[in-house]
Image (cartoon, rainbow, N blue to C red; front, top):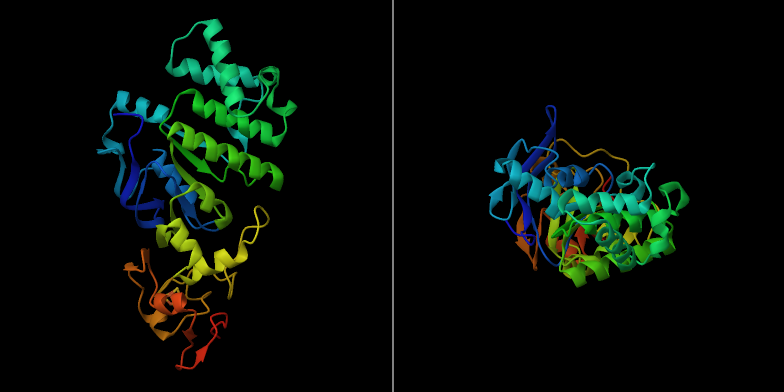
Length: 327
Ligand code: SF4
């Protein structure tokens, strides 16, 4: 097992109790970065938990390199936990409030490497420098730092074990807009310099363009559109992706809401998105769409060609603009 293994899922379904919350998801994360996009409750964080080995699939396989995560022995799991590092929404989740920043980073260093005091001190200073912090900050505890500083320390702690991959779960959404931009700059630089694979989980389409070569858009536990980020963002083929893109003109702010009836729960029959979808027709009620390849991406929508073309006949065949919700 090397530090540059890919991480992925093959037909993964995840459930809490008897309720499936992620359905049949296949994706692969390597160098270049992958975005997992969707609103709260779409299943993206649950999927990330499975990718981190914290949740077992009901069916399907989570793979690290060529190996099934569930089949890793004790040594293999220890190596996996070192090689794949999470960074959460709020840096304080990764930091012990009683420990200084320096002690938190040093603790991660010595978990996987033996090193003397001097070497440890130098390495902590080097890691703080790498995330753009003054090494003097090593003496501070989490409550003595700003949110942005805490997130930088959390990133330094993740880097301390020399991972091959970062799982970034909404890493900037708890921060002020200007601080978000700086943390994204930092992540962009660090992942490029160190050749790190990364999965970026976000509700904000605005951030994936910079950090992710590939993106998957999730709704109600299903991937509804995936492909090269530039293709998906420039010309969405799924009405949900289109609504997300149009709702996010800026970095930060409120989570985007899909157009149409934004509060409607996923439909239990037919297409799960149909109760919100301005493109819905009778077929969407009667038949769940299957994933298919279209114009350089994979999309799960009966009317993707019309979404791409910008035309959307409503039920009854009359042509209207794409923004007209079906009543
Ligand atoms: Fe909308 Fe129908 Fe496409 Fe579902 S299948 S996203 S309801 S047009």
